Image (cartoon, rainbow, N blue to C red):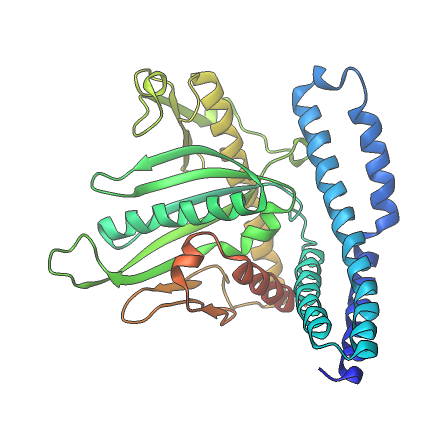
Length: 368
């Protein structure tokens, strides 16, 4: 890489980082961290467990964000020195090291820039993800289970806590549906671009004639409801059913009528939870999911009104959004952004950051 090219590249990276730092507002972030550290040090913090968890989670997130921003700024500054050293000594190994670090820093800056694009009303929230098997029979159920594993592995790679609320198992293989939470700030803003219909093309392992099968699974992503959202649910509008949990879960879960299904009569929305031993705990978790679905319904109604005022007839961007092709060739392609990779197994093992980043940038362009 020519010296002039390196100089321009470093200037561009530094300029982009300045924009990121301005959006993140590092001074405010430091002030928020100081305030949260004071709250976390209070001797009565854990008297209110829910609030304590929010305080410590928010503190950990902000500390991590600040640390990443400061470290990235330091790496950008050090790059200039590294390239100068390579040039002065005319050392190929040092130059190769500098160019490798430049590529790594460029990738890190791009990733952090994407986070600054998450400025929607609910983007900072944790996420509830619902996956359901659609057309394709047993292959669709198997695909739905693969998608569940993909998102859980993605969260695991990043160190994000998850909690599975409910899984309905299919008879032969796979799952009919599942609902789980991704408990980290900005999970909703990040994963909301995954909403829509996912399509799998492969030789079916369930077809004894070895024919190619196309199957579909739907992904719904909801923001976790907070106290300020004012989602009122009248008890008279609810039908509550209790039943015995199915599938893995241990003797205590499977032998008592602890699972809860809630039906919201005015909208027809049905949610269920079976991950806890207690019927009361399952009802509370199911209520959280129901509130999130009603919040999303309200958001979509408000968006539809705005789209009507703007004359937006493009429809939802969430439908038919990604194809996973395992036969006759290997490819995963986002049908909205055209981002594609040739390693489906890596994607299904949780390597989806490239799709998330391109989806977030694509959505932002559409909003502008």
